[in-house]
Amino acid sequence: MRRSAVSAHPRTSSRATRRRGRTLAYSGGAAALAATLLATGVTTGTAGATTHRAADTGASRTATALGLGEREQLVVTDTITDRDGTTHTRYERTYAGLPVLGGDLVVHRAADGKVTGSTRATQRTIAVDSLTPKVTPTAATSRALRVAKADRTAPGAKSDTPRKVIWAAKGKPVLAYETVVRGVQADGTPSRLHVVTDATTGLELHRYQAIHNGTGTSQYSGKVPLTTRKSGSTYQLTDTARGGHNTYDLKGGTSGRGTLFTDADDVWGDGTPANRQTAAVDAAFGAATTWDFYKTTFGRNGIKNDGKAAYSRVHYGNSYVNAFWDDQAFAITYGDGQGNKKPLTSLDVAGHEFSHGVTSATAGLRYSGESGGLNEATSDIFGTGVEYAAKNASDPGDYLIGEEIDIRGDGSPLRYQDKPSRDGKSADYWTPDVGKLDVHYSSGVANHFFFLLAEGSGKKVIDGVSYDSPTKDGSTLTGIGRDKALRIWYKALTTYFTSTTDYRGARAGTLKAAADLYGAGGTEAKAVAAAWTAVDVKG
Image (cartoon, rainbow, N blue to C red; front, side, top):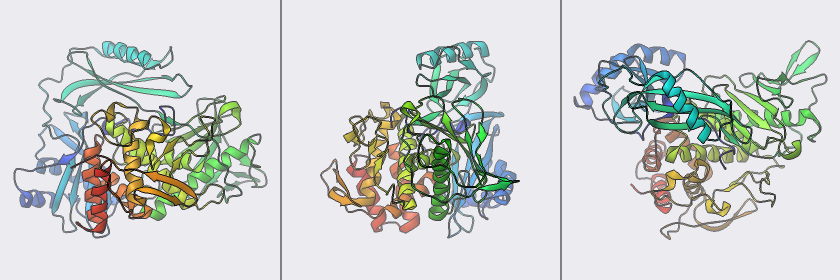
């Protein structure tokens, strides 16, 4: 979607600014590395608190075994365990106590603890000559505020105190400041603009918007079941079965949580925007449906896989035609659309925004360049998965993004996965310049890949919708099915993508994922390779 369209926001940690991951080599050899890592106590167990505690205990020895410097430390952020016992442990990195933006990495171990590979966002050695900045925090703040003005953040924006970091996402690692400027974007969306400034030269190194939002129109799903909580004589719109998800009414406000929805008889909404509960019903139903999709399809227990829910806010602002995920607040927020008549609470919007949180909690794909396009496409891909999984007669699944929105006023979808360029701006195929596009348009390459992988090329009618998906090389592809395509993308996202993964890295990651799930050299892996080649992403 466009810049102010259904989207997500990368984490505000070092995860948000890194280069594409590559295989890590260890000069001591695989056997030596495996032996060292076996001693760290992080090679067994399932994802959860016990595994994380053990992993934290051995993180320093893991850093040494990986050939990192004595000033570097690792912090475990996630552990994924496959059915065969293979583990994938994701780490953030610090240098002399400072966060390393572009330092994330994943260590892959077989069930016996032997290291089978590693993926990291940068191959460069982290070494900085001096940790004493020549640029003052005040100067970094001034630059950040100038950048925010150029980025159309409203006048009056305020800057947080800059924090010292090591910038390693691109080029030689350097000491830098990361400054967050808070304000309001031109369309009324909150702004959390991150600006990275070289602490020696004062030059801007990178910027990204940490609030990524979306557009949509309420697609009511008819009568739906809701899980609520009774408190005294009233019911609260709190989903006690899914991590305690709450739905709040902002009542036209743009800050705070708002007021928790309550009701006397546990019968919510009437299907019209005039009833304030209606948008809340759609938001709560969308959150529940997306939670169930991730749980049933991937075994994932909530956005962070910790069983804890985000929360939703509806009725944001006045005639606000957007929805957005805010990772800092850990919340999804929905506007009411033009004239406050079409709340942006459709199933694919809810699935899209929820999925941005999942991306943030796993790969943390940086929201700019090719990684930003992959971030957006991930939300589109899983939003499609949610819509199909819901099996809702009022909003059946399809490969059209925002098909109920009518944001252009002509009844057309916001994006098309079979041929993304149908929207007039998205890319069907990779080019060297695709990373220069807005992330909502560069996402087209991955969206197109997903459709080709799931359904194949050419003209076809699927569930009553007509599609016509071309290939760059003129090849004819047969799809492997949506379920397998979703599982391959999720596996790659959670175990092989890093914050700076680009399209070439996505090809490598999904090939590894297909091999893990269905066998190397199998039909699925061959289909992944063919689909990437068809969108001109080659190995």
